[in-house]
Image 1 (cartoon, rainbow, N blue to C red):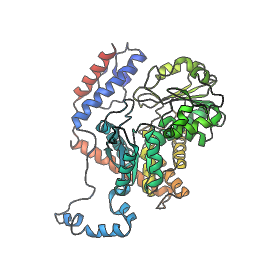
Image 2: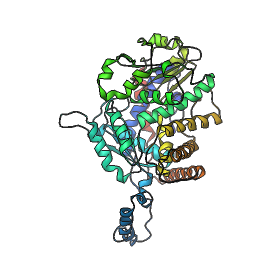
Image 3: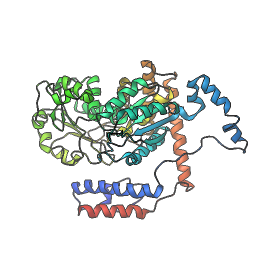
Image 4: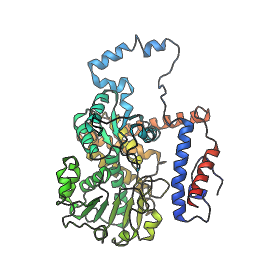
Length: 484
């Protein structure tokens, strides 16, 4: 094994040279999980609260609190919209979850989602200078069932304190009702990142993959494996972007979606799936292998693999097939196996493989743009514009089969997204405030620079303590031993 360092810049190089690609893929997953556990215990979580105003003498407490702050209170009372500029509301997101579908781990109980929600908050702050707080809620009703109305009521009650709400890890079918109700009834953007966020970044990856293989979105045959909130929204956005629903076949755990799926029709909670049943798969093909025959694209967001997507499905696809295997924490098929089966372009949701199609590339910039123009909602058009913003950014830098998306360290991609989304919000008539593209871009870059400078200073001064390399070495040993 190579000497390990805190940067973790080359994970593959950490493992023994005689490890196969499969062993490395499995060991990386174990390593990252072990290190996540130990580092979260070491830091006590990932987020904290810090002031943004200075103390220049103790009378400043009389400015920030009583009696001075009374003028702030009465000003907001007289015009609620001033709360966006007189408080941190204009840059504050609530990350709300009932933790019923946390990554690939399912229902983790309400506090079980805190690690993920703090992670979302960390990404928002570091990547786009957005403040966020994790709010994991108990959605059980008196019958012991998860009740979407409890989440809806909770979000409505908290919206006066936030500029936007990011819903996360809410299981279907509750997620559909929660999002669609809140999008219409709240006066701030309510965004379901598992659905709209994943839909936006997947569309971005698909745009560039199609550019590489020289295929038109209007002509492609698409197979969708998994029919949860993510894939259902991906399908909706791809169709809005030009794909033909009659050339799309989607599968859930019981088979393919089509207009004879009476079980879906009978349950009104699954109305989003029923919409797709009516639009897609007119020939009612119910076998995945048959559905994949001559398909151009396979998009899987189902259960973690690595054997969920079968190599023979990919072998049955058309020329230069595109495979997105985006389950977390383990993709439905490992990239090397998909390539061996004939895939021309392979994407996953993980950053330790090529072509990361992960909503972390989207939601920080999208929410920043919505916040800066004080948007009342995030429309589907804004999500599609964000997809083209990401895709075009990557194309300008140069794309190839192993490089279809921007990278997490492309700092200004989030500012580009923010500016493009903000302009679309103004165009859609959902913005309270008008700004120019340059104003949004420059403000976002300033906020990112300030955030990263603050974190760098805290690390340098040891206000953020440096973990011992032994923590990494212990996690690596567990990972290596687990696959030997």
